[in-house]
Length: 240
Image 1 (tube, one colour):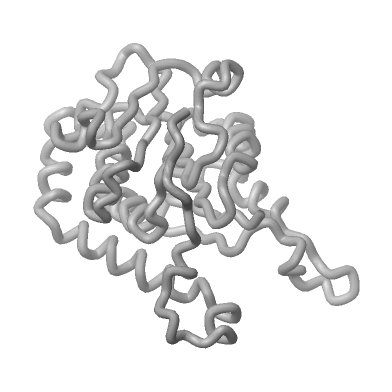
Image 2: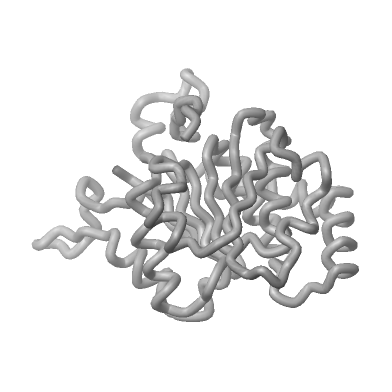
């Protein structure tokens, strides 16, 4: 795989004027305001209106809705990833908003590897032409996630993973387990339709470590920095 630029944690790119105590004590407060601001920006944009028009003209069944697309866009812009992998890219609604976020952040070398198993859909059909090109960072892959992993055809180190393929408990949990180790420190594991079963909350629970005496979270041994859910989107920030 092509070598990508070094990745740095978003909250570490803050102003150098911030005190060390402030940056270490509350490094994630900024994510909520940032993602909300980016999401509100895209919701009010002509891009959102055009994507809704495209979605409705094509057929909205099985396609991510506007609130979740806005959250996905916000998370992507906040993280500024260089390498993204998504499962279940389908006709490209989620792909379009990831690619739009990469473009708006001027991440010209970033890549989105979008995996779609079904032969019965036009993969990436909703993505605008200027974002769908290889130069725009879109890399469509047709086949099963399992096969791409078995053949070692996916980047071994990634900044962001989006699950949006089969929403069975078993498959969701399996994908989380497979891609979590590939995430860099500070990378994002994102899942759509987390309400469908307990896979996401149970996986997040397994990333916690607790102090034996107090029962509270042991920050040193817990393998996530932060996690949350907005709408049907769940996310966890990897801590190596």
